[in-house]
Length: 395
Image (cartoon, rainbow, N blue to C red; front, side, top):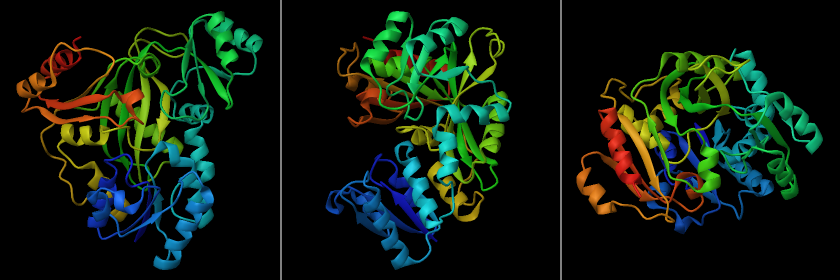
């Protein structure tokens, strides 16, 4: 089997996908813009061959790289980056080379926020009302219907980047003064906690492994206001999240992928959407959760999801991972360089050395959303996890 992996060196933990596939006897053919001699040795060891391009943004260059691998190794069976930024380019390459997996028309469905809504509706999941941002007058008519605040965001975009909460007509006018080059949509504001359904599905869109994460109410505010970030992996997946998540995967016809589905759990009754505690659609992301979340899932569930992914690609079933291991809560708590914190890094590490799984600096590319210095730690007890979070983030 020949598997092309786009950008195996970034994010820094993604070489693990290549490593596990290679262990399953797959030819892993990497394409990236990092010079080969600058690759980490772990990345080099995970690849059969590497093709360096000047820019991954240059489709012609990447196309030629794929063509070279197809000429040298024969039919390309899979092509992935598992990265939101490259999903559409991945799909175009699959379309042009007739490679197994989501083609360009499929990917438009789950990278366009407006298109997502009809699939959520097909799955029976309530969605927020929305419109495309066209003019201040038309937007004000929509706001008169749904009320302030509203949220504006790119119709196609990554995470909470360039997403804003509009709380007044002045905010709206300021938003238009900034100008925007890509289509934006405006949605009614949902007051709810953000929860996710993450995991890996097989070639028939059936979940073979899953987990649940709990996030702060607004990643948008964290990015825009440069706030502290913490979120955690739950010990168990609530049944209502599992049922809704499986329906969404079937509606989108997602196959052989690591997925990250986001929902709101309503804090209060919301007319037209549901009662307090009900699930409402947020976004579907047909790639792994961001940052080091796959590693957090591994720590919490005592598994190796990189290997599960490799097994699904190769065998369409889990063969090399035992799922019957102890489960934990696993938290991500990140500090910002702009703040002064009460407890030193050494103090935290000394007190929680048996719980901390990772402690690193976050790359500058991801720091706006993920913080500058982060701790990942696992706990058997929920209250112990919250005490750890409070200590890390105490100013």
